[in-house]
Image (cartoon, one colour):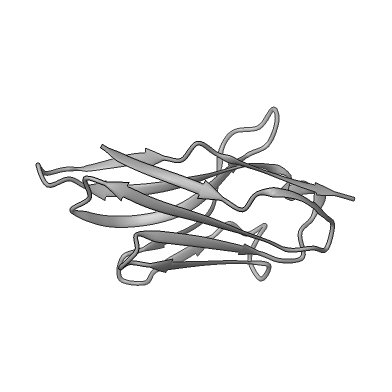
Length: 120
């Protein structure tokens, strides 16, 4: 079993910054990718940013130039630095990891979610 523990959400004024972190632990042979998704009330969960082992990074167009994802593969940890926050960034942010198991196969794991609220 794999656990993802997130931290760093909160309330911030528009234009401010927050930094989210997510640490993976448990039965991990290899992590193929780690990233962040978000879900606003009444909307579908959407990709915010993902970093793939090997260094490829993808961002949602709405956060490019404002958010930065980074990862420490030795600690199975990923961060999301969020700058110039806007009210439309308000959502529950979920950490995701694609984890290879010792027994074989890759599986998706999700964190419990952390609330980010941006006041205008």
